[in-house]
Length: 275
Ligand code: C2E
Ligand code: CA
Ligand code: CA
Ligand code: CA
Image 1 (spheres, rainbow, N blue to C red):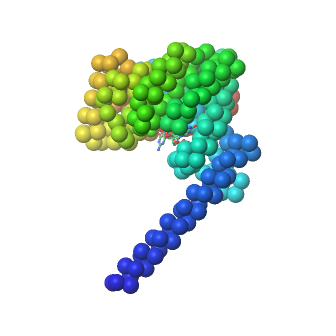
Image 2: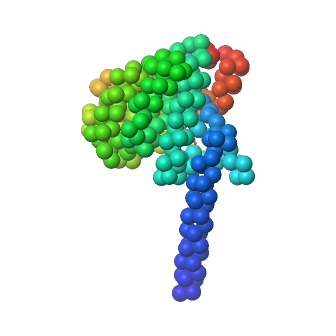
Image 3: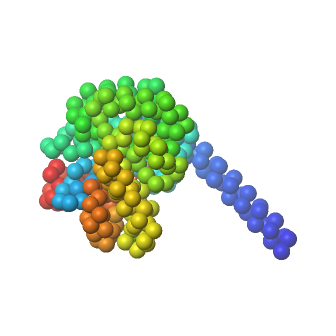
């Protein structure tokens, strides 16, 4: 049993070594990924729960590595955030998403994920302003998605940045609500325009009474604060049915549409999407 234990430890050590090396390789490749044209955006529809109409899209980043194929953003975004490569990548995402949305015949909203490093960059507000001017996108069409964890390392600075962003006319959504270091006081301290309930709650809303109770309270919270609530990760009719019954404002998930190249929505294959 003793030697087995040692073997397990050595195996674990070796695995860790590979992971560290892998991270370094990915970090190196990430620095060139935008310039080499390996990044692209996919768009996932967000719908009005009452009418089913598409109200906007969330832009989601995809990286096609020349040798590894697609690497998940859940893997490369944290690496990019640690190495500051996220500033360059995030700027590309913002430009690309706004440039695309400015071409839409309907003023649908475009939601862009923004990481903590970007929020705390002294150039971020100026960048957003410049991108809005350059692309001609109406500011009210742009929605910035931030997580609570992105704000708490320096809340005063974050608050100033969010206020400046709002003065440009855009909207701010609290992403992944209910996960991480959520605190209700964040809803009061920061000028959010929307709450996005994390998919981990939506997933079992129709099968687990506790989850259902939590989602109902978040919806009540939204109503009380006058904030619309969007449920993410909706995969089944049963989950959507719950959200309709509980008068959730908006929804997003595979049931209504998978993240896809924008051409999929503009080629009129989906008659309901007015692009
Ligand atoms: P997120 O912001 O919570 O985005 C939602 C994730 O859930 C996306 O994963 C989306 O593809 C996935 N999803 C949507 N509907 C469903 C569903 O019905 N079922 C399931 N199982 N999944 C669903 P994705 O695209 O892999 O992105 C993962 C995370 O990476 C995002 O989570 C976000 O935190 C981050 N991310 C993606 N793009 C960007 C970006 O441009 N900038 C930054 N900073 N982060 C990004
Ligand atoms: Ca998001
Ligand atoms: Ca989420
Ligand atoms: Ca379910």
